[in-house]
Image 1 (cartoon, rainbow, N blue to C red):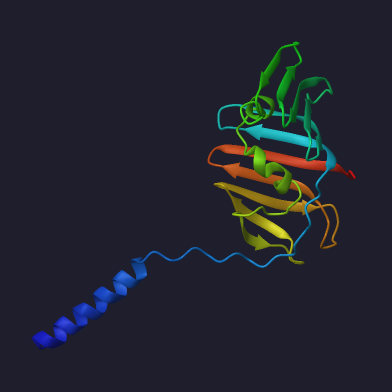
Image 2 (spheres, rainbow, N blue to C red):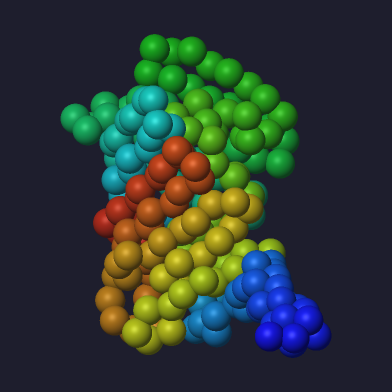
Length: 193
């Protein structure tokens, strides 16, 4: 084999190897059915949260509106474990033992309520399967609703919806970020006006 043929073969193989190792651009967002965001709602469901070391579960009542969020977490036996109320003026956490904590916003208190850290500003979008700006829809179900979404490092999976219509609200949501896991099963949705 001539020297020039060997150099050409080495160059071709090298280019092929480098092409295979090249960083691929991120996958484009998948087209999905748009679901309008409800500005105010109440939901009732069951929540389980784990950070890899600790785990907790119970019931969740959440009333959400532009003016206020109120989360109430109850034990599996129905006793109130904690209640967090957040308004533009501040946040207040009341625990079952009567301890009251206040802060200027709920960001630092929500992990104390849920047992794990979660992005407060994304939760209303997550529970409605309505990806917020910056989130990417990675896959959709058979009728085009989000099935898997990436948002602020979290992967949110919508494994079940309330019914088979395109505008149905989610029933089961699994969100993960590293060892942190949150599972929410929504038993009842109530839109508020």
